[in-house]
Image (cartoon, rainbow, N blue to C red):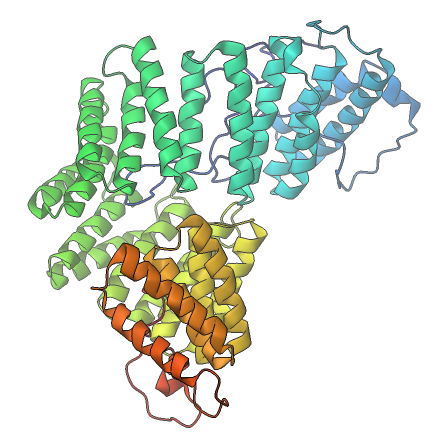
Length: 610
């Protein structure tokens, strides 16, 4: 059996058939202690490139605990004790993938190989502490990785997790570089798999542990460490942890400057990521500086398409700075390159059309904006071969936002529904779908379709809970769902949602954030309606104190909240024979059963500001 590869690669040995278990339309994994493959970048604050979610699986490895394959393995089969069986079955698994026989057959081989390796590990005496020989232990780790990769290729990501959790427990990094490599590979592949399941926090924790092992083995200035730092920084961007992302990206830049030529492609990639982080933090001038330097590096290397992509990002920054003429120039420059190099119906051309549509909408040129939207839709409706559903869904989502802003909510809803349908069967897209459902909920609310709004928010909340989401965005969606419940007179349910939203937003944003203050106001109104006057008074007193001491009293909500508090204090101690005045500020009068006429629907003044 070939030995486990060293620190150069975590893939299978050079003399073995490479395992190519690809997860459709996902991103490459980062299971290499050496130079991991670069990931494409996904849009975050704008159409600038950023990190896409990594896809599990690549170097093949496999598990035994928790496997739920259809294959029935006889655990008492004496042939599993043969030390030559495991390597043979693992080779068959690789061959099955390479020959196109299909992952199901490879899965059967990989499960049996793992069982055999486990038997052999159990039969071997414990290794001498400090020894470097991996023996069947590293063979078992590799087999577990292969098994997990095959599960991922079948879209069975949940079943890939137990093998990988077992795989990271097998190697001992203190026993030498081969063990370190296996441990690093396992943590990174597990992080990729959890990312595909939408469990971003757990995914990041795995990447952090992998980076820690890599630094302990290679030192903190090795260029391979720089690659992993950038990968983790991209994960932080995806999780909207921009301060951590910035810290790691700066470290990556320092490492690449020390080991690469000036204006290298590696440095250009780092600067593009830094631009995304700076843009997300509102530091547009710094973002522009990084993009210009990245563009210069790409021009020197003759990377015309990459230069055009950076031009789009530069256009986004100019638009954020309201330098619209310069933004149009950047977009048109990129558009010319994309049309000539990729064709006039390529999705990158459509993406530039969308940027131009947004720009012209912002400058009040609605006819031009609509024209560019229609041009983009023609491309998305008849995609060229090779276009991913993520590209189409992202474009449709952006166009829907423009239609929504020009008061065409029905058309915007159709585009969001189409986008959601494209993503619903794709692995790792549950959080994205939840975001679309939340947006649909907002639009349903503005149309007065409160039951539809509540259902959309509820579906989004369910998906976010399943992914372990505890971000500020989750708190916002809970608050929105609470407002929909208020309109449906489901006051108790609304109160529970506002309470949960308050806890999350206090943790993520702090009590002085406008989102948190909005939830406080909603909760006070709901407590008033439920007869919990003292609780409502307590919350309003807290809000007024925060505004007076830290935020100032110029906000128009201050006087309104002051009046509401005075009313509650006046009514405190009396019998509850009056209408809950606070709740009247939240409820749309047209939602009342006695009202039949229709009118324009607006978000309540005390509700969350969308």
